Image (cartoon, rainbow, N blue to C red; front, top):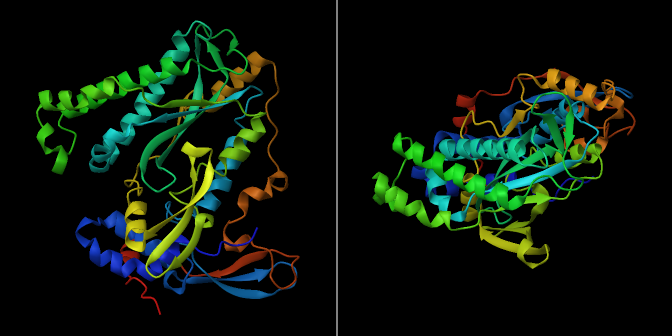
Length: 400
C-alpha cells in the first residue's frame, strides 16, 4: 500500500502558525498540543532512532512518532494491538452494528461540555441496549457489547455518534442458557430510538440540575431549569437516529472491519486531495445521494478549526465495554458462554497468522528493508521522545 500524497501533518506544518495566530484565544493546551505534535510527528524535532535490517545489515535514520491519539499515522499501531486483544473475544454467533446519534440541535451544547455530553451518550446508549435486551419478548437476555465514539461527519462537521458492536444474543436472565436473537434481527430500532431519546434527555436534565453544564454565548439564556426544559422540549418530538446495520458474515469479518475503524481520527490522510494556496481539498461520501464521492475545498484555517472540534478531552475513554464484555469479568463471562454454546476456548493467536493488511501504517521499526526487500528494519538505537511540555514549547514549522 503506497503512502498518501498528502497528510494532515502537512496542513499543520504549512499553515499551523497562521492558524495559531488567528485562533489563539480559542486554543486550549490540548488543542495546541495536537497541533504541534502532529506537525512534528516523525521529524527531527521529536528526536530519532536508528534502524538496522535483520537480513542485510542496512541502516537508516528514522524519526520518532508523536504518539498522539489524534494522529492518523500513530493510531495504526494501536489498531494492531487492539485487534490482537479482541480476537480471542469472538463468539460463533451473528454480530450486529448499531449506531446511536445525537441530534444536531445539541451541537453548541456539546462543544461547550464535551466530557459531560460524551459520557451521557455512552451511558444512555449502554442503558438502552441493556434494558431493551432484558425486556424485549424475543430476547430477554443479558447481553454484552462495546461502543466506539466518533464525533465527526464526512465534512468534518460535528456529528457525535456511537458505533456499537453487539453479539446476537445473550445469557438468559436466570443464567442457565444462551439465548440467540431472531436470525438477522437484533432488536426493534424504533424501540431503541425512543428509549435512547428519553434516557439521554432525562440524564441531560439531571446534569443541568446539578450545575454540571457550561452555558455561554447562545446558550446563556438557559441557566434556569424552566428555560432549559423548554429549550429541550422540541427534541422529544423528533425521531432520534438509531441505525442497525445487517449482521456481518462471520465473526472474523467483524474485527477485520473494525480494526480499520476503531482507531480512526476525524479524517484519514488518504482523503486529502490537495493542499495549496491556503486551501485544503478532500473527498467525502455524500450519504444523502447514494454514497457518491464528492470534493470539498476549505480554507486551511477552516479545515484546522473543524479538525480541532474533534480533539477529545484528556482522559476521555473512546472505546468502552459493557455487559458480559465489560473489562472486570470478560474472561469469566466468555468462558461461561462458550460452555453454554458447547464450543472450545480459542487457541492463542500466532503473530504470523495476523492479517498484515491491518498494519499498513504501523511503526517504522517494523517496515521492510528498502535495500534488500527481504529483512525487517529493527530498532538498535533510540532517543527519547520529548515530553508534553517540551512539545508545547516547540515553535510551529514555517513553510519554506
